[in-house]
Image 1 (tube, rainbow, N blue to C red):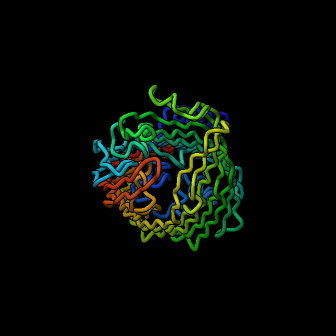
Image 2 (tube, one colour):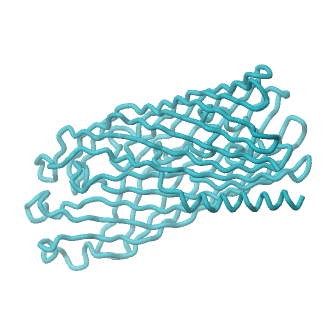
Image 3 (tube, helix red, strand yellow):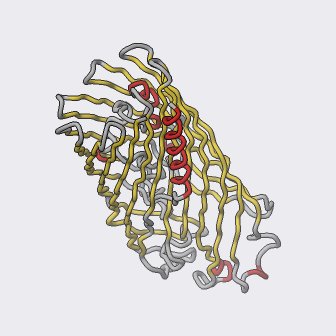
Length: 433
């Protein structure tokens, strides 16, 4: 028993280490699927029903009731995205053509996660997951066509999710968890100060807003096992409201400063509120025979919570900054298959369609979101009865999308995002103890 607890402590040390190496990650919308490395191989299908390792704490805490031993897992997914912007006649505030360059705003990232689940007795299991559920990282040069809308955008979240599962009977289990989520955000763009001096695009400055804060939520799940081969899972994760407090800073060109009203565009404290969406997943898992299993998943995400982002400055002279999103709720549908030729090896594959929440009229360079098709594959190898290693790969095909934005201070942005693809590589190590 003492050795088991030492193993658990070592795993939690790995959890802490994975947090510190986590950069801001590229996302669909700003939600990240890349929790755990194994499930990516089967396109995250059956996430709320598979319940075969400690990652179920995140996907459906009720699934812990199926774990017969203590279990821990650490994982990381490397994301290499690309989305190339091509301008199609953007205009400045004076309706003159923007002088700029096309750019690829995508940045590579690593998304870590870690999990520990303890079996207390036949009825009760408890666990803890640490992961990055939302993230964003886009960066453009200062002479980008859309620089007055965005240059650098970063969002990093860290979710700490203790959970408990209770087995009601041989078929039905329930689970619940508490979520404490930290968020750190940075938004930066160029400002056309030259427009106020009748010299559009000649005197660019910049505006930067950065801050962080905590938010809290919950998740609940149910797992129903029809028999030893078939099970269904339902999982709901609540919305999390983040109170973000930080600073707003401005760089104003010298020739413009004498003409500005006193106090305008001076650095000050700022705050905003972000409502991260709730979601509901319905999953199924069926083992056809000793070698083959199939799984499926449908997930609804309430992206309508992303209506607008209002930044309130402590400086009474500085007007609020309002970022319009007006996103729609979305559905994600995935199917997967697993082939287990023997007790050591498992091969997985899957397909996933992930609907994007943005449309042409509200898509911005900060989040150039699009519908995505995932094609995935994975392999797992059990080294012994305690240790397992899984590798996964996914290619995301993003649809070509248009951007049509108009602002009295940023002009008109007209362009297209092409080649919105990504390659993902996942690694997961699972230890039973």
